[in-house]
Every structure is written in C-alpha cells, then in structure tokens.
Length: 330
Image (cartoon, rainbow, N blue to C red; front, top):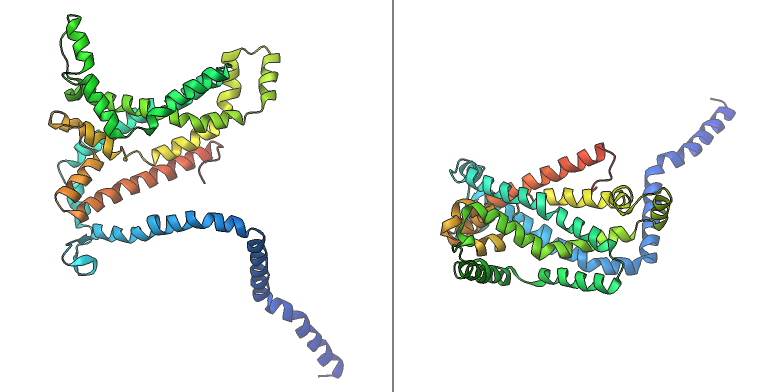
C-alpha cells in the first residue's frame, strides 16, 4: 500500500466516524432538547404533576388487583397464597343462568339512555343558544344545572314521595276519580322511569360542553347563511349542527365505552323485589356477589368483562368515525 492510499484510507475512517456515533449523538441532542423544553415549561409540568399522581395512584396502581379474577381469592390467604384458577371465574360467569338476564337489562337501560338521554343536552343547548334575553337564559341555565348537584338518594326520595303508592301523583289521581298506580313497582315502566331521572338530573349539566362548542362557531357563517335567505331552522340545520358535530361524535364514542356501566347508585336505590327481573344489572350483580356474598374474585370478573366490552366498543366506534372522515377520540 502506497503512502497516498494509506492517507486516503485514514481520511475515509475520519469521514465515517460521525455516522458510527449518529445514535448517541441523536440521543444526546434529544436529551438536550427535552431538558431545554422542561426548563422552559417547568411550571406547566408542576401544574400537571397532581393530575399525573392521581392517575398513577388511583387508576394504574389498583390495576394489579385485576389478578383477583384469576384467583379463588381468600382474605385469609391474601393475593399471593390464594389458589390460581385461571379462567374458571369467567367460565362460571358466562355459564351463569343470570348472565343473559343481566345482559338484557343492562343493554336495555343503556339503549334508552343513548336514545333519549344522550340527545337531551344537545337539544337543550340548541334551545338555550336561540334565546336572546341573557337574563332569562342565565336563569334557565341555573335551573337546569341545579339537579346535577342532588345525590341519587335525594332524587330517589323525591320519586318515592311523588310517584309512590301514597305519593302526590296518586293522591291527585284518586281525587280526580282515577285509580291509584304505584309507578315504582311497575316492571313495564321501570326503564323509562330511570331514563327520565337521568334526563332530569344531568341533561342540564351536559349542556355546558355543547354551549362551549356553540360559542366556538364563527358568527360570519350565520351572517352568510342569513344573506343566502336561511331562516333560524336552516341556520341551526346547516351551521349550528355541523359546527358541533365533532363534539357530538367524540362524546358519543366515550358514551359507548360505558354501555355496560349503567350506574350502581340509581338502580340500587330504585330497585325492589317487584322489579328485580328488570332492575338487576351487572353493577348491582357485582355488588351482590362481591360485597354481600364475599365472592371478590367473581365480582372482579364482572368488572373486567364490562371494561373489555367498553374498550372494544370505543375502539370500534373510533375507527368507524375515522373511516367517515371524523377526528375521533385519538
């Protein structure tokens, strides 16, 4: 090898050195950039810290308790000494004769909620948006927000006082010459009663999100629609609804994730032996198995089943939304 060739080879090695160290250099540059961003946004990170700790402590750490579903858990033996039974609890749950009754009741109540309760805040927000008298609008908003702050215990008490056998409605009906009807023990109207309670309690509170979305619509769109001769109805149809469509779809996707989560308090307080066949849902069943009967592993199995179904529905609905050109949840 000549001297000139040796010199050229040494030059090639010098040229290759930066490529060989590309990954460490890139990592160092990323760490430097991240450190600079952290120093610039340190107060935002400090503000986010309580939220992160909340999710880590109360949402992620308890997830290790899901292993209960695969154990025959005994409080005397603890998590690690309890017998590992695999999917035996799931098999017992799916083969349980009550499974399809619980599934029917849960889906029936959720279907009514999606059909009537979900659109209620949208309709209410559209109506409030049309009000031009701000004093009246704020008074109505206060009135419809108020039931959200009542507990289900209070609402159940109001229902018993008004719709019970000796309630106000029956007193008025009897005085008018009609027959007394105990609406609270009527199986055919129990789901409708639960849906009406949910609408009265939370539809006003749900308008907050939609009113915020309505406030974000560009006013020039309304002016352009009016110049084209559109009335109030067509403005709502072609400007307002498209303006809040993305919000409606996102909330609907999130609502589908709770399709098997009908809420424990409301149904437990309103149920009785007369309506057990239509009132027993997965939430009340899990409470009965886990707390009253001490079958913690079985109750955990019910919870996992609900969560998996909700996750599948959210992923499926999100993909469908994206396929139709919407943003989706993620």
